[in-house]
Every structure is written in C-alpha cells, then in structure tokens.
Amino acid sequence: MPPLPSSFSARLHRQRGRLGLGALLALLVLAGGLAVAWWLMSQPPRVERRPPPAAAPPLVEAVTVMPRAVAPSLHGFGRVVAEREARLASRVAGRLEAYAPGVLPGRVVAADAPLAHLDDADLALTLREAEAALTQAEAALAMEQGEQQRARAEYRSFGRELPAERRALVLREPQLRSAEAEVERARAARDRARLDLERATLVAPWAGMVQARLLGEGSEVASGTELVHLVDVSRFWVQASLPGEALAWLAPADGDTPGSAVTLTSRGWPAGSERRGELLSVLPALEENGLQAQLLIAVEDPLALAEENHDAPALRLGDLVRLDFQAVERDDLIALPAAALRPGNEVWVLDAEERLRRRPVSVLHRDDDQALVAEGLAAGERVIISPLGQPREGMTLRTASPDDERPAGAEPTEPRP
Image (cartoon, rainbow, N blue to C red; front, top):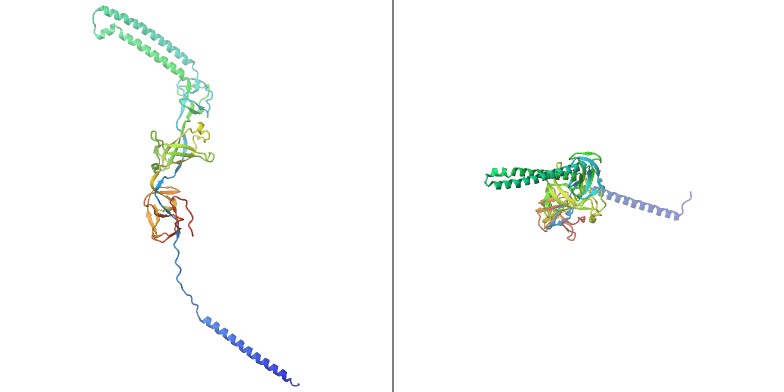
C-alpha cells in the first residue's frame, strides 16, 4: 500500500485532537450535572413558616332604634252573621190567602209593609159581635144611671141620714159599678176583635230582606205559625277571633264613641275592593277551639243598597272575610324588625367599640314583620338584625358605613362584603 500524503496525515491528526477535547468537555458537563443533582437531593426542602393573617370581623347590618308612635298590625278572619233576623208568625188563626206582591226571597221590604194576608171573614164577624155587645152594655149603663137619679131623689125625700153601707145600697152604687164594668169588658172585647182583624195582615216590623217564605198560600194557619223569615239589612255583624293579648290594642264602641276601625276584604271581591266596619264589642265567652277572644264588628249597609255604597261589594250572610284592625298607637315603644328578636326575647346590641352585647328586652307584641319593645333598649342604640353563626358576648363585628345604616322600621338591605 502506498504511503499517505503528508497533508492528509496532518488533517487526521487534528481531527483526533478535536474528538478527544469534545469527549472531555462532555464528561465534565455530565459530572457537573450529576453533582448538582446529588446536592439538590441531599438538601431537604425548607418551608418558611409565617403567621396567618388576622381574619376580618364579620360584617353585620344594624338599625338605630328610636321610640316613636307605633301600633301592631292586627288581622284575623271572621264570619258574617245577621245582627237582627226574625221568623214572623201569625198571631191569629185562619187560612193564608196570599203573600203581598214583591214578598219573594231576596227582595227588600220596607218597615210596616204588608207581607201576607189571612182570611179575615170570621174575624170581621167577631168584631161585629163585640161591637153589638158593647152597644148593649152601654145601654144597660144608661138605664142604670137613670135608676141612680131616681134613687137619689127618693133618698133626699126620706129626710134622714143613713150609714154609709146602707146609703150605698139605697143609691144603687153596686149596680152602677157593675154596669160600668160590663161596658169596659165589652169595649175590651171589641178592641181585641179589632186588633185580631188587623193582625190578619202580617206586616214587616222593620226594613229587611225576605230570606224565605215558610208556608204556601192556601195553608191553614194557627196562632204562632211562622210564615216569613226576614233579615235586617241595615247592618250586619262579623264575628271574629283574636288572641287575648290583642285586646289591649283595640277600643270597642262605647256610647257615642265609635270603636276601632276595621277594614274588610275578601278573595271573592274584585281586586282592590274593601269595606269599612267598626269594632262593636268583645263577647264574654272565649272561642271554644283556640280559646281566643271573640269580637263583633258592625258593618253598615252590608248589601250596598245606599247610593253612596253602590259600587262597594256586598256582604252575604256566611261570608268569610279578612279583617285588618286599626290598633291604638303608643308613642313610648321601639319597633324592631322581626329578625332582630332572638330566642328568649333577646336582642344583640353593638356597643361603642363595635362589640356584640346580649340584651334581654320586654316585648309587648310580635308578628311576622315587627316586634314592639317596651323596655330594655335606649334611644340611639344599634341593634343587629343580621344572623350570626356563632355569636359570642364581646365578639368584634364590623358594620356598613354610617351612610348605609338605617333606622328601625326601614326596609332591610343586603350587607356589603
């Protein structure tokens, strides 16, 4: 084999030198990486512990309380009943000839209007007999008075005074009294017969609505037989029940002083329709089931027959209506939202250092919307109305800005986060 050229040998020598240097550098890099990896694995991780940041106090909503004139919202339900109704009966016997025109169920009749007519032929004959008997008794009295004049003349001619008993007999005083008594008896019989004849026509004792005709025309009627059921339509009553403690806020009517006003509404009426009533009285007996107090509310012109009530809804007997009472206000109470009252009649108050303080209070009334407090709070104090998961005495709280705080009784707002 021929020898290589010298230039080629030089290039091969240089390439071998470069390969040796590159391998050395690669080994050095690999060794450095392994050393760094070993160092990282041999050094445990170090976590720097820092104290946790302090938690912010819970954000609550509070109301500033001030005494003011306030009354509770009292409402209930009641049943409409008649104030006055009557089953009119005949006071004489006879055959029911006919009812008067317009005497139909649901029709209104005026006071003293005729309702029904009975056959009065026999009653008319009885009246004629009584009048004849009266005429006869008056004639007998006139004849006896003539005998009296003759007896007085004879007694004066006798010329001697007699004892009082003998003188009465001589002057026929017993016969005169008897004749006068017969006249009175006959006159009373005539008046009774005349009254019975008038009673053959049944009349309305007061203005009312015919509820029912209780007997058919042509029926034989005895004294005391009911003919017409009449209901007074000038005023109805509504009988309602309320808890006994609600009576302290109401004023029944007393003489000329009207009672507490009552607003009546019903689901069966057009939207927005209502009637006005007046608390008439409190019944002495409690309601049997719930042992609540029973009240009577009077409603004038319940059927809206008057011109001024023409557009008002009519009350019907048996209607179930809702009653909203206008309670008597008191100006020394504090009204709180119902959410501010905690179990056990307790409230949470924010002191000047924004700390929670528990406070027992005296509650006069509580409903779904508000609680009326009589004692336990002072004007200007802040009462918490927001719920708290774990309330503690003295815990620090934070409230919304003063611009966001609202007085007691205002509409609630959502607290800021």
